[in-house]
Image (cartoon, rainbow, N blue to C red):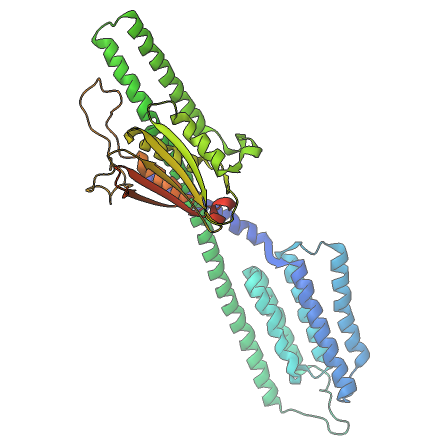
Amino acid sequence: MSDHTITSDFKEPRRFGKDRMRRLGTESGVRLQTQVLLRWLAVAGQLAAVLMVDFALGFDLPLGMCLGAIAASAWLNVFLAVRYPTTRRLPDGQAALYFGYDVLQLAVLLYLTGGLANPFALLFLVPVTISATTLSLRSTVSLWFLAAALVSFLAFFHRPLPWQEGEPLVLDFLYILGIWVALELGLGFMAVYAWRIAQESKRMSDALTATQLVLAREQRLSAIDGLAAAAAHELGTPLGTISLVTKELQRGLPDEEQLREDLALLHSQAERCRDILSRLTRQPDERDALLARQPVSLLLNEIVDPYRGSDVSIQIELEAEGETTEPIVPRDPEIMYGLGNLVENASDFAEDKVIVKAVFSNERMHIRLIDDGPGFPADILEKLGEPYITTRPRSGLADEREEHEGMGLGFFIAKTFLERSGADVSIANRGDGVPGAIVTVEWPRALIEAGNRGD
């Protein structure tokens, strides 16, 4: 791949990230439902605190004004719930406005109940911290200035802290100053810390999104490569036959009967090429929905049918282990191509018979392809399934139509496709005293029936 190609691959994710950040600049990360819920929690907490201090502890509060401030927040929630759908994601400015109201409402309650001497002054940190994690930097800075200004105001102007009658609690100004400094530093530190963490999270999210886009493109390219490789392998046999027949015709003019047979063979092989390309390029949604899933016996019959009619007999056998039903499996093109390729290989090397045997239980399902051919050579048995490893004969005789040089891709493609469906593929020679090979394809039954992918 050239440098230019690599550069173009990564431009789209970068553009996507910038567009996404522009959209986030006008839309906050806060849903209305979340903000309303947080405000209801604040209303409940404030109401419980006010009632407990006034009635349970007996401290004299300006109860009417405190309840009025709390009721204002409750009415705001009711208005927002009626005016907007709760799933609405708030614009950045609107969300900042509502957080600003929460800061002002808290300041009113603290003004009525002792200012910074009230321990609940710590709650100024909450709206600013939430804003730093969800809103833009401009909104967060504005909210921080508002909260800092109100904290400074409450340090000097407030009603007395409710206390026992006749024993007013007077805190030294130096102590109030310490609380003021602590709140101001806390507001600044929490805002900066939360904002930096949020920015790191957003950058990671954007990087992940860009990576997913690149991977999606690579998967599409990989799928195209696999399709091209499958087409190249499947077309290899008929095109090889066409090439041999053409050379025979060029070598000398045969009699009329032989010419007719050769032309008929050429026509049939050309039709096969067309059918292969049509099958490989057919979209999944073009298949009948009723045939998308079928019993394994019907699937095997459909796979085996194109290879029947030759000198080799192909038998399908089913065996159930224990009390179980026949699996209903997806008509996945990768599974059909993979099994079809294995059946074709077995019939090419078999002397008389190929057995396609499906064995299934409640937990597993495996398909064995057994032939009575020469079996796999011991020196390549362990390597078989890797690209460009082939057991097909390499012959220089142009008139041997049944034998052609293999590219070593067919078994590799078939094995790869089957493994992508979640199968385990194993290869061995027969051990029952009869020459031949056994290829076993095994799935967990739940996986193959569900149609899940193993990759």
